Amino acid sequence: MFEKLLYPTDFSDVSKKALAYVKGMQSAGARQVIVLRVISEKKMKCISKGISMAGRDTASFLKDVCEGLIQEASDEMEPVESELKAAGLDVKVRIDCGQPHAKILEIAEEEDVSAIVLGSHGRSNLAEMLLGSVSEYVIRHANKPVLVIKRD
Image 1 (cartoon, helix red, strand yellow):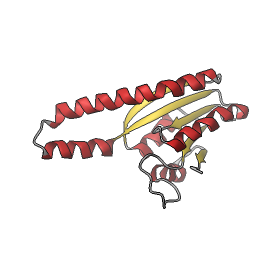
Image 2 (cartoon, helix red, strand yellow):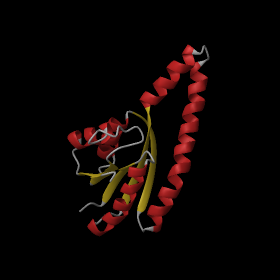
Image 3 (cartoon, one colour):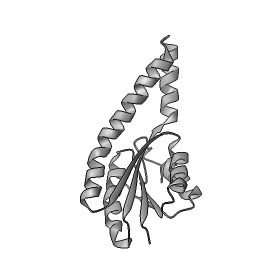
C-alpha cells in the first residue's frame, strides 16, 4: 500500500523520531524511502543580506556556505541511509535547495511517492504552535497521504 515513502528531515529530534515510523511502515508495504534534506532558500537569503551589509563579496561567500551546508547535510544523512538500508529498505538520498514546504510537495510528485512521513516541528519551531509551518503546509497541500509524527 505504501511502497514508496518520502522522508523529509532537518535532523531535528522530532524528525529523528519519524525515522522509527518510516522503518515501521515496512509492515504496510514500504520498500523504498527517499530521504530528503532541503536547504532553506530563506536561510541563504538571510546570510546573503548579512554578508552584503558587511561589505563582502556575497557570490563567492554564498557558494562556499552552500557547499558547506550540502556537505553537512550529506554527512548527517549517511547514518540515516545506513539505518534504513540495515532495516531492509531501498534508499535514495536527495539534497535540494529551496523553500522546504514547496520542495517536499514537488519531490513527492516528481518521485510519485505513496506517502510522506515527517515530524510535526523542525529546528525552527515555536513551542506554542500546534504544528510547524512546513508540516502544516504539507498537510494542507499534499496530494499524497501524510503521516505527521508529534514531538511528544
